[in-house]
Amino acid sequence: MKIVLQHLTKRFPARDKKGEDVIAVNDFDFEIPDGKLIGLLGPSGCGKSTALNLICGLLAPSSGRILFGDDDVTELPPENRGVGLVFQNYALYPHLTVRKNILFPLQNLKGDERPTKAEMEQRMLACARLVQIEPLLERRPKELSGGQQQRVAIARALVKRPRVLLLDEPLSNLDARLRLQTREEIRRIQRETGVTTVFVTHDQEEAMSISDLIVVMNAGVVQQIDRPQTVYDEPINQFVAQFLGTPPINLFSGRVRDGRLYLGEQCVLVVPGAEDGEVNVGIRPEGFVLDPEGPLGCELLAVEVMGRDTSVVFDHGARASSSLRAIIPSEERMHAGERSVRFSLKPSKVYLFDKVSGARIRFGGK
Ligand code: ADP
Ligand code: MG
Image 1 (tube, helix red, strand yellow):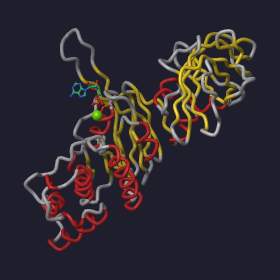
Image 2 (image 1 turned 90 degrees about the vertical axis):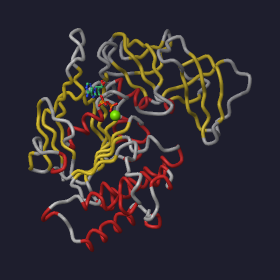
Image 3 (image 1 turned 30 degrees about the horizontal axis):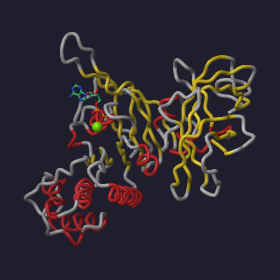
């Protein structure tokens, strides 16, 4: 079931006269394709939960419309929209067993919608099997780990066969290892059921790893919608470039003159087509190549061995982020005791941004 958002806006009135209204969701106008998993990604407070609550009907929009397929659901109450919801805190009924927690939404159905007892049992078992908690059906939530509780919450969301599955930071309460495992599980479950899914997270790595498409948002405004790799490789602006990637992109203040990019006095790259002037420069950590003849000379601060890679911490007079870090293959030996390091740059890993708007400045025909 595709989800269509048409100029969807949610404005919260100011708490007092002096305050300003908060536009938590600002003119969302895009389609979520049928059967895909969409990652809604952005910093805390950017409006992710508000967007999700609009889609499920817990909040009414200030303006705009929401369609599921061809059905306009804008005025429908949540229980009639056919959505499954999973939140950060699993919100299971503590006094009910896993079995009864999963059955609960079915037992609440009325009239024609209510399946027979045998059907309920069958659907409960199918969902328990899907999320791999079948052996735990007679336990109560407090007898389960966080990851297991979240699986139960997912089973409970799926048992009504929702048209749309909505997950709001579902992994945030889990420890690191369980987070990895559970996100793979969610991906598998989504593939197996083919249910259109919106997955909200502030964690860029999580969004990258799990999503078919990522919607990056900031302060209520959609910045970019693309496949994860495209968002990383072709960020539309400085915000997106900075939000994705670990370690984060390195920032410099630079200058373009006659199709060449300068960091301080060093001419570090040819940037054909870019206009003369001051620019912000973003360079991905993997964009630096150790090169004794390279144009970018830096002060070497530290070399951190990480196994597969080596992380080189350095400084430069044109630095604009709090630190600078290059990631190089661990086979490349750094000499102990060096105080400086030289790099050449991979052009595809260098991005120019407008100093004021942060918009990407293209060069070299890309
Ligand atoms: P996120 O989930 O991305 O962290 P939210 O959607 O929860 O962000 O919040 C977006 C913005 O809307 C925030 O500035 C928040 O303070 C504001 N907000 C959320 N809910 C309400 C509300 N009920 N009343 C007023 N402001 C709200
Ligand atoms: Mg939230």
